Image: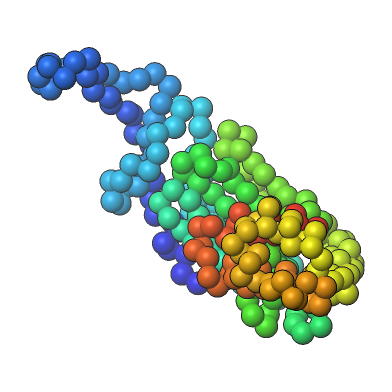
Length: 255
């Protein structure tokens, strides 16, 4: 995967504001001032203003984050690949998916490889986020293990480091039996009215109506319903909205 689009240059600039006290004052007579405590994050190659932030905001550049990540992965002892299926970048934020093809779970049909998701933003919509999930080989469905595996979150004001990434992966492996047992359990449990209501209320009513018919309640397994949901999120939703849905799915199905 080409990571160059993620690594566009950004810079910090001072902010000038027109002090327009009255629409009757000629623009040339209006004073400009520099507000205390603010700066602009600008995309340097296109001169686009991405956001206005406080001086206390510590910017974490995508290229620095990715460089740290790749260095840590290279020494982690695990095979990995950068997965484009759930990765995207925009001026204001990015999401990068790393898949570990040797770290596997399994359901009745497919291998399920452990994955990691890395988020960053330049508009304060989120700090650097790192959390584990998985991708189902047979259909490239992405899912998040937000309940079983602990998330890592760092606000930009406190910095970020991948120095303990190998330890995070080792800790994740310790939970593999728990995850596998949960998958096995979901393959035996049947969908009931309460689960459909939870999906409707906590994920999306429209999505619930799309993935299951009323007559299927009590007949299909919860794992089958989960895979219908993750298939829709992974293939029909815009990249920008997938993380929120995946996180909600993990909560409803206790993954």
